[in-house]
Image (cartoon, rainbow, N blue to C red; front, side, top):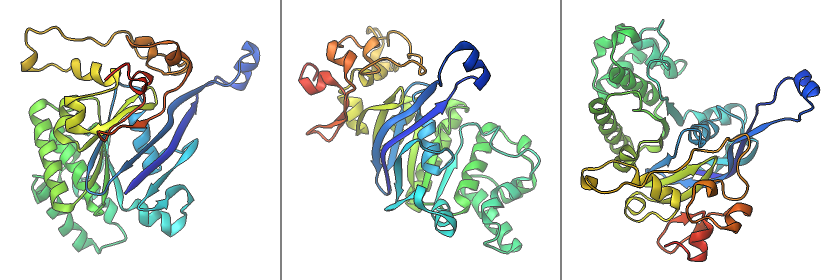
Length: 325
């Protein structure tokens, strides 16, 4: 369904023209997404994980056209999105929706819930049918049709996220980008929302791009997982395989840092160092300053994603050379 090829997104964070002239500095670019490629199959949940600033959310926004790519392409159902215009682009975009991270910021506080949920239906259904559809959508996400007359401030965080899901489903999309949809919620409410999203996927045959930094949530939701680091993909693997046998050193460190009952009393591997400044990223493999297995090649050459016989893809010189399992 989704094919991302060599996608790049660079943001200009330079100062003003006058400031650059006085300081004799050139333009400064942040490579938020740097040559990323992957595919998402119809009906699956594909997850992007990584630390803050790795480029996960930017990829979601690039796929939906909320940001412009510097280079590369996104194909949706065989059509390249940046080459579509007018009615063709609108038709494809109606098949895609996004659930945003913050349910407190993504709903207009001045609108009643029924108007928020009905917004994607404007121009497609008469008013009476829109209101009936809104009632049905609210029931599907565990709310009452009567809740449509209320304002967002009258609901809890979990209820607001249910409203966001109802709004996303209103246009009957096939593909949903879920950008940290539970990170602002309590753990008990997180489970309810995640189970709801699973049920809706089974009912409608939805395809998800699930973006998160929470490895426990990702394990519960995903079919395949891509691990991101500083704008690039370090590893792609089926979910079960990644958690049982990760290959990339960064993937191993991420999983080792997740607390679990089985790990009580055992020494935990702490991820050393900090994410480098994206304005001045390291040469070669971006992870090499924090990697205990880095050598001179890692410092000089950017690794490519290489397919392995077990179905995973890994961008690591150590794995490629056989120095790491």
